[in-house]
Length: 497
Ligand code: UDP
Image (tube, rainbow, N blue to C red; front, side, top):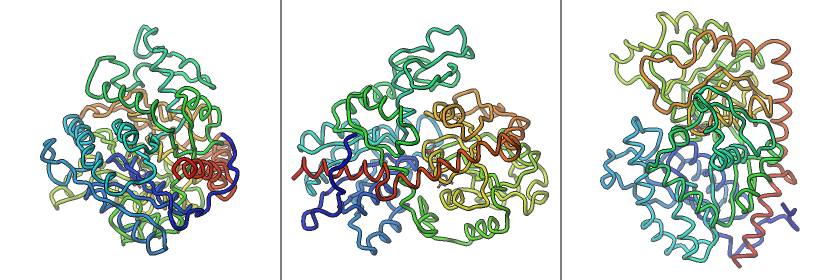
């Protein structure tokens, strides 16, 4: 990328560049895009986030707080078409989806948002649109209005490159079995995979609503102005270039955007309706009492689903490792009855591990926890945001990919960056079987011990710390992401004046 001629700093005080941000209705898309909008606003942009009502409640306090600080960040609401797609009222986010059928309905809703969105565009006439990849119609809409559309994928250039090469060369067709290893060709590093680690739609090769949508997405990317990525050059330098070449579009790395959450209040509120409440305060006090780098943080993002037998296996693996941990379980206790029959917890687990293990049911203040000096490891599903947040905090990772592009990300962690180790997950699976154990307790225990202590662990920790430093430098004044954002804003300013 060409370095910026000058830093864009509020150069149109009276007529600010106005950018619309349209995120997907999932935490892994919405949270980074909200952070991105806030980051842009800090650089003098008027940022408008387009959200459905339920999603808006999750971030409105954060936005209000920024406004109090004088930033021009606004939320505009767009109604979620619950009745039209047949989803119950209030289900507006992927994290509330519990079946493949509901997932289909959610995708349908993203199509139906086009008209109401166009109405907003008409009213506000922004200068530019940053829209999530799963709104392929956004490129067409932007062209119609004569404004640039930037694509936001939610993942890094590395995973996007792997995906491109897999779709183009289909190396998985040349192997005899699902467990035979193949090399993904055309990449800067040697990346090996098996068919079992690939998403259903790639493996089956059958046409579905999703595959058609992906086709449209690729097309829309090709006609977009470019791509903004929540990552930083130093993390995946060869892949930024590779991906930009592959799509023939400019790519701007502006992250890690989660670093725009500077204080504990911001970090706690991220993606949650609550402020620093008792629960989180309790978790911080607990962490404060621990030695540096001694606690493993275990969290599998906002969409993961585990059967009771697998949860039980995780519990036993953690206990047997002998290490202290915070474990986030996406199951909230609702009634007294439910409390009494938490089948996924081994008998007497919480009592036995009092002071040693801390379970958070529901939503955890992840960025806040990762930044705590007591946290010395992160067992993650390798969702891009989680992975990047771990790297940014300089924390070594235990990679346990589940679905989406997480198996690609795992290789980045273990083979390319070497800031973590794999737990041994072998099978891509969005909706796991109730009675199947995918990763055994022995493997969980082994991975945790290997990550937390010993010579190998020290090497991993020092590489992770170095990468964390680079991440912070990247977003600081004069850093690579800071400069990329300057260049992007300058270009937009020139093109839209
Ligand atoms: N997250 C959080 N608390 C939780 C679960 C998730 O703050 O209890 C945040 C996490 O910090 C990340 C996002 O939600 O920013 C999840 O995105 P990711 O790409 O890691 O995974 P996904 O949820 O999309 O699978």
